[in-house]
Length: 240
Image 1 (cartoon, rainbow, N blue to C red):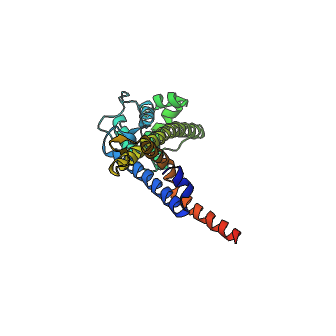
Image 2: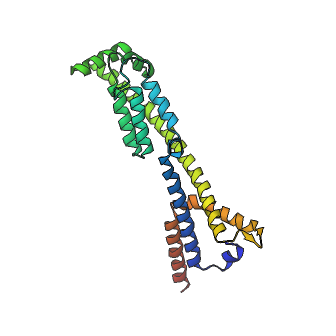
Image 3: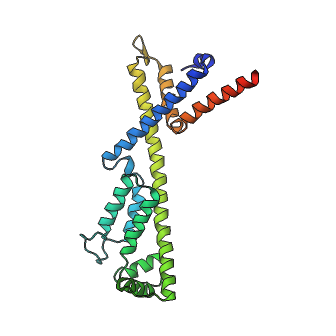
């Protein structure tokens, strides 16, 4: 692809190039997604925000729950991490985290949770006891429990939004690097990176540009190709 190609290319060649570059971006995203098989790589990016949220709302040293419990801090962290790496819908992940953290509310954990969420600890402790015994809450207790729920959701939402933003940014950057690598590898195997044993920096640069364009084009390549064909058809109809 050079200036001569851009000047002489037909619409079909342009749309084919757009589609091919988009396919390269899709392949790069696929490689990034496949990295979830290895611990600590791209899919784990951003999870530190969620881990800190769990550590804050479910402190491991509170002594209220055994480590073997499904509601222990380590168990909750393992559960939300599995959901994160497996790509569960973000709304569902938040719902699971909220449910697990609310289930930790009992007479022992209520004071710490009240301090974190700004709710009266005596009222929240009373709420925890009544929930455990299936007793009816008073209006002040309902109000305190409602405020506790809202603040808990705010904590969880903030952690997941920051984690998702970090993951998407990291994944796009990694996919761009992968696309550039794939483009350069393809150019190497097509033997267009060198001429008579000398590196062809022009073609190396073009392969890099193709790789950089691949990631942003991947989600819209098909629509862009269709739009170009539609626009060409419209222009032809007007010229007639």
